[in-house]
Amino acid sequence: MTNILVVADIKQGELKGSTAELLSRARALGADTAVVAVGAQVKDLADQLAAAGSDTQYIVEDASLEIFSANPFAAAVVKAANEFNADMVWFGFSETGKAVAPRVAVQLEAACATEIIDVTIDGDAVQIIRPAIANKVLQKVKVNAPKLVAVVRAGAFEADPEIAGKENVVALDPPETDTRAKIKELISDASGEIDLTDADIVVSVGRGARDQAGVDMVKDLADDLAAGFGSSRAMVDAGLMAHNKQVGQTGKIVAPSLYIAVGISGAIQHLAGMNGSKVILAVNKDPEAPIFNVADFGIVGDLFDVVPLLKEEIKKIRA
Amino acid sequence: MKILTTVKKVVDVELNIHVENGAILDKGLQYVINAWDENAVEAAVQLKESHKADTTLVSLGSGDNTDIIRKCYAMGIDNAIHIDDPALAKADSPTFARVLQKVYEAGDYDLVITGKQAQDTDAGQAGIMLAQFLNIPCVSNVIKIEVTDDSHIQVSRLGDAGTEILDVTLPAVITVSDGINEPRLPAMRGIMMAKKKKINVMDLAGLGTSFEDVGGTAPTSEIVEFMPTEKRKGGQKFEGEPAEVTAKVVDLLVNEAKVL
Image 1 (cartoon, chains in turn orange, purple):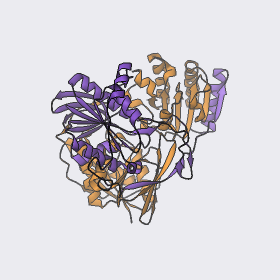
Image 2 (image 1 turned 180 degrees about the horizontal axis):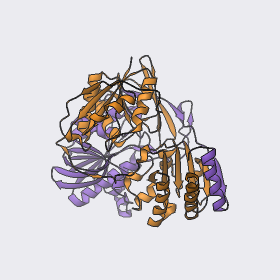
Image 3 (image 1 turned 90 degrees about the vertical axis):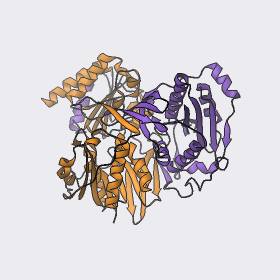
Image 4 (image 1 turned 120 degrees about the vertical axis):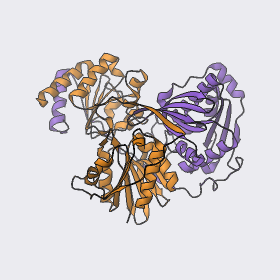
């Protein structure tokens, strides 16, 4: 039997969908499942964590965990992994996962794999699949170490609504704070914004929008759709969009039901961040733009004409 | 302040990659400096200019990295080490981190700056693991480095909840995102001077270690096969009267794709 510990993905006190996705997959693999929740206020999430498909909930709660700090977070996960005797530790795709997974892997003497899209367990043999080279190839990787720490790529697994676990809460002592990489301040992302990595629809804006007025117009479309609002790198470099909005190989990886790329030409690094989307709509005035090679639906036209029309049409169907 | 920065030579992701029989074909591949490592080099050179930091670059790999090292010299790096060992062709992240550990321990560095990940593997592990092995602090995905005093820096990191500001005690490892800077284009003078500079090339034995010593012979994981990514195909593209095509596409999104 394989023991899989899933690290709860919690943002601003809310449990994110990836946790249930990972737990569903772990159960489908026949594994015993547990989840570890780390934060200043996570106790109250225990029933949700059980409903998401875990049979044990390790709770590491302390005021000192209010703002993310990688080493204490890793220490908490390691503690839970040892308590549970975990063969695998899975993180959802997040900056937290990317920062913490290698630390946990070193401490558990485990193999570490980021951005995995599949895991197979055949007796003692564990293999994972992950994209590489900006999503241009897939690697099949054999795990040699007795344990595996993995960060699962956004959208790789689906939550099974039938699955539920049972509540078995185990409180663990909080880790020590990090005195060598001391958190001084968190400049929070604007609250109330729709989380890009968790949104069902994502609208992203590219260079075609030209300036702030163009960005605002596309943002309006995103707001109308209650969509996450993302960006190409060009708009971040131009100072028109915040770094944390960048979709791509180096930024956020998204896999929504619908991705709307507005004025984005489709550089390979951008495509690597969104080509797991279920349906892609591209709006671009250049009919040769590479984005059309991956888009299910393309509108060749000036976004300054098309975006207001899209808003109108959407208003009609939503009425 | 002594800074060690790391660079990796990676396949150019802009070009087509062909996979056959489980392997990537060499044909048509070109190699470039990993883009995020270029940001790391720029960050190091900026600290050289602002705080008289001494900058050393290390590249790991199997084969000649002279071209990318010359580029970093031209950007302003002071010294370069190239660990050239055929065994490293198939090394995993912990092994790379162990080699970097040996390089670090052979110098007297205050700060290690690496790119947040390599464009070929997108793993993003070596820098963080290096800090774990050395038991020194590490902050990843950094977009700003400021020197506080001889033994402290303040960094900004892009996290899940926002931008985290941290006070870091040196020595430390920092992995940088592309948001930290715009790597400079080397000036002609720098390019000419770079040609005269010496590159300290050594294999693992020259570094006083061996492939076994750095865990290379017992990798935690190994790639057994490459496969082509299932390519998305372009679908329906509409040109014409904007109002008409927009209405048509929205109708398809609602009734055919059922995503609106």
